[in-house]
Length: 255
Image (tube, rainbow, N blue to C red; front, top):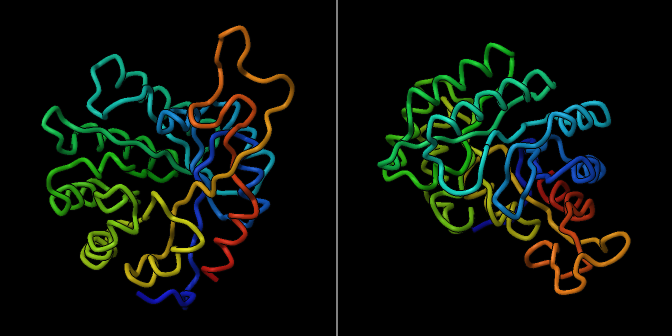
């Protein structure tokens, strides 16, 4: 697999857990962010205040996650009502797009609900992005046909694999077969060391990466007296963050 720099502009989207992450992403040269809360849970809906702050403080394109809870993507009526309200609030706050996913109890794309979110996003002049719920569906081509047919603008996928490099074969197929109707955005495990090769193999025009690092938490540790509020996997004195140096390196290898 070639690792030469691509011969076309590649959009770098950085997965962010808050305003500070978005500032770091812009510092590193990213063009777009996916704004979340609670990244250790896979990403949940960010606050309206966070969306407004990123819009005010940066020039980034902002795609806001609409995910009301952790776990799978088959939503009951209460969760779905909350998701729709969050979509409306995120769009009103200035998000350029919303990332979402919804599946039936059988694991297929929930067509009616996807259409509902797409309609709201497009009515606001924003993009509708179907996230990695796609990686759980049983029929990738059938699901992509549905998503393209109802007007989804972009599909975030790891190629139905734990990481996008592992799923590169399916990502390449989706780009070749469907890229003219829906943007294909590979994400999961994308790093400066593999991004150019992934782009070369798949033919995509954009990548999604966490560009993650750690910072020392300000103030006292998050563990005391047997009480532990630390982030899983980080230890008591560290916080996960977007590393602007990693963003810069990723942008550079894709120039």
